[in-house]
Length: 167
Image 1: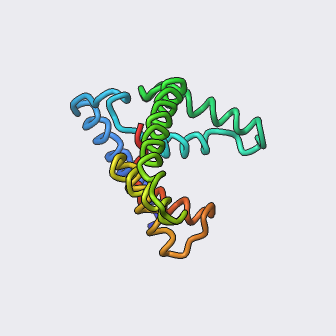
Image 2: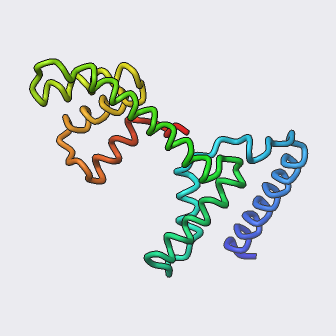
């Protein structure tokens, strides 16, 4: 026997041993929680769908395939349906508009320049809505880094600063 064949047999034996030990541990391990109880983020779902959806598809076909894949994965993970997210988003928008109008009325009669009024309304809204306050703070940090609004770097900095999305 050559040294090469001895090494191959040893590697094969070691890998079979590891495989058998893995099977034994998997059978004796306590049952894991169902997938719905595990925390899955939208970003993880999107990345899995990007891998799953064919690279041959382009344009509307790819978007539709991605949308279907994401919806299927969200439902299997026990996350809210598209309609539920839309209703939640609309209610948050309505609430935000009401708060904005209230803050605008508060500063409407005061003799302020446009920039002062905008800053005052923004501060008022930040006091009423902690999510908005966090967004304003993240935007200021991104602007301090001299990132251009609308650029990928700006959006990435905002996502990183804001943390996980809220419902």
